[in-house]
Image (cartoon, rainbow, N blue to C red; front, side, top):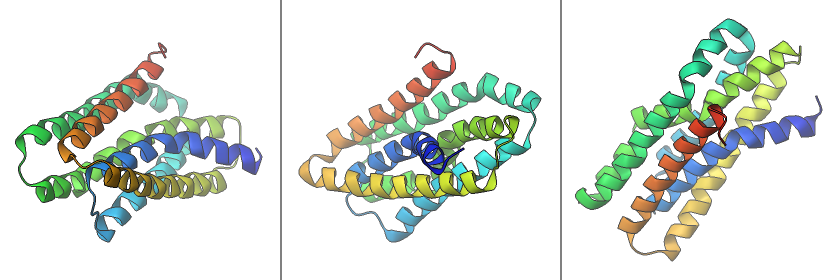
Length: 190
């Protein structure tokens, strides 16, 4: 497989991470360096690790994971998106909401939810006897870069819009829509 093909696959896999990074960037105008790095590293490393895991596990295990992965993604992103919408109307302290969004637990959930597709791609690479390590590294780096760009673009966009409540509601809706999109793709409606 050519380098260009690997990069295109990496970009495709990184779109969900990019979308969530944009949401974080839009919702929170002043994201600490620690929070940025956490999101970037988690998303990049999870894409890399899930790709390698997919390449190492057998088709039987993947079959069981694929049977429920879309439900898990829908529930996780739906929960986080719903919480953003709820907090937009009930949460007084934006700093607390930001701390919760970038908490280790939430970042791990988002990284896992956005990297499940990398597991399936890793398996497909193994099934066609493609090398795993180089594509995994490219996929991890591209996901990390897309996360960085997403945070940056989200922050730039948030400076244009002044009302944080509307931004949080829109961001919550985006997360829920990402979950629904992934769900529909997996049940082959979309």
